[in-house]
Length: 171
Image 1 (cartoon, helix red, strand yellow):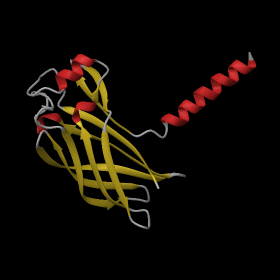
Image 2 (tube, one colour):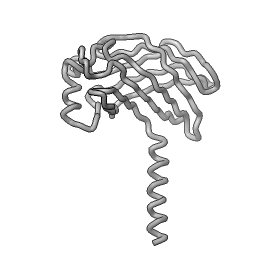
Image 3 (cartoon, rainbow, N blue to C red):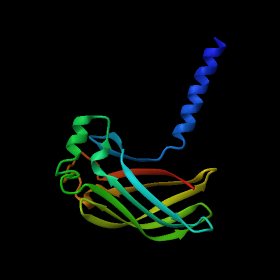
C-alpha cells in the first residue's frame, strides 16, 4: 500500500512540475453569460534580452487554425468568416513597439496586435522572471474582439476577451 501511495505522489508531483514549465496562450470570453475558455496549440514567440537580462523585444505569431475550446464543432465555427476567417487570415501577430521597465521583473509593453488584418496598438503588462534554465515571461490582458471584427455584432457574446500568455525561454 505504501508503495502505491509513493507511486501516486511521484506521478502527481512530476505532472505538477511539468505543467509549471509549459508555455501556453489561453483565452476566456463570456457567451450567453457562461465562460468559454480555450487556447491556441501552435504559435511562435520570440523574446530578446539585453546582456543585462532586460527585455528588449517580443514578437508572436499564432496559427489561428490551432484554436481549441474543447468542442470540435465550435472550433470549426470559429474558423469561419464571421469569426477568424482562417481562409484569408491564417495568423494572429504581435510585435512590440516600445518597452518600459517598471521594476526588476515588471514591464509595460506597447505592441501592435494584428487579428483578421486589423492592427491595433495595445499596451500589455509583462512579467519576466529568471529561472534555472532561462526566463519565464507572462502577461494577462484584455482586448475588445469587435476592434478586430471577430464575432460580428453578437449580443450574446461579450466583447471582452481575457488573454493569458505564459512562455518559457531557455538560455
